[in-house]
Image (cartoon, rainbow, N blue to C red; front, side, top):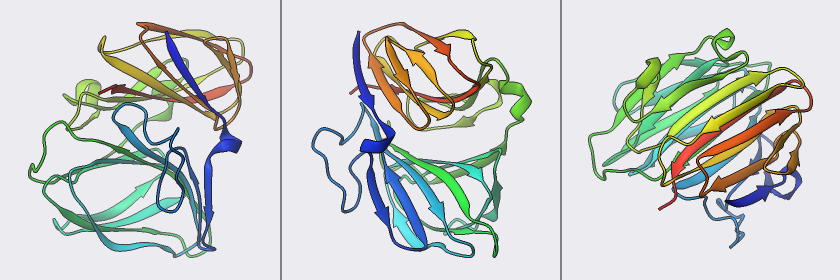
Length: 236
């Protein structure tokens, strides 16, 4: 087993006033040669966006972009004609492919927006851009992992252009649960969204993460009630 621990307090930070961002991996003006990516997982930004503020129209290409709102709602618009609101409980995915332009703005004029924006390198390049969003019932992840994103849209998840699986689970204090890697060549990046857990001999607190590879099964024990995000991703 190989493991890398990513402590919440060691993340990169950028406060632009309207945007307070925490970077798990090197991004924009934050660069750490030890934290450029975990396998094909390239970006995990933990963003808080002020009311009515956000990212204006800007381009992406050849990247799988997953957005998970945690609190509040996002107003989305893109060059494919998609417009809509993505709220907490929803998941959004864009396969940027050969090129897409989009904007993401806090839909509220009074409340902040909190979200994860996650980038994964694609399996196939220069594909036709694709967009998807879906609401996932939180009760479906009580005491177990719920699949949000997968290569084949399994279990009602959103489809992604990579051999990567995104799952989330809500677990009670004192619960023991195992996560099994989807592919032998994949690793698992586990972030504690809320709570405290023990994983691979490490105690992890809120927003701590651990990257584990070269192991088929990961055993997890919750210290408190905990919400977990697991990104099961190719290592090369």
